[in-house]
Length: 305
Image 1 (cartoon, helix red, strand yellow):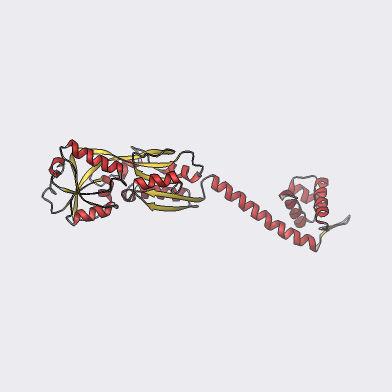
Image 2 (cartoon, one colour; image 1 turned 60 degrees about the vertical axis):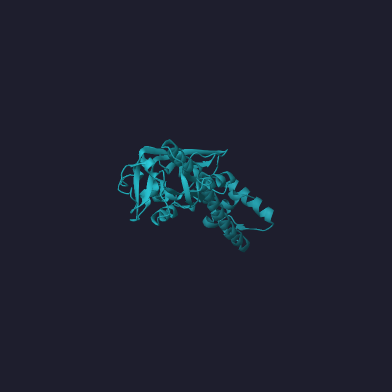
């Protein structure tokens, strides 16, 4: 007994006419009659009473057909769910992101994804780049928006945007009026920075730029969240060098962001995912993420950076 038998019996119960029910099921009348007899023999009970003039459903037939309808509805829902999941239209996607992306690149990507895949549940987690790489490799995250490079086997990445680094200074700082600000002018300053172990690429870019300018960075305070770093700068704990996205997302009036001279590049936001991940929602997210020179380039417009 299978779903085709269920469909045949439901059709016969609704038509109470073998010829019409057979036509509805795409069967010949003898084929339908054989199917009904097989089911009745398997159940050991009569489902339909037949005479030369009419077909009547028995109480046992009514009970069977009611359950058969429910089974067919469940089967149709199962097929629909599988197809939607296979197309990436449902399911769950766990997205990691660095805090600076939340103010610039991420919002339009999330809007596009929700518009295109409204049935997918999004789980968003703000995490440092190094932690994202770990959780991607472990399977805890499905995709990550992080700073490159990513040193993990089994992961693939795509650059979303490459932007300059900016100096972050208290508004009352003696150099706050300088734009661009010569990097050597910060040689004697104490810095508030992201921990090296959590932001390897960013830390390395800042250290490399400082050494090229002739000094070593003196870290006086570390903070995990970029907005915390900006807050500590506002409090006068130190100065910092931050990605352009942090400045674009900041609404503080007690901190200024200044271009550096020479320009300091070298950090880029990347999209990362596990190689060969079968989750269709991952492909969907990749399809709506920007590419360098397109959406990503517009993300920084209006920031005067």
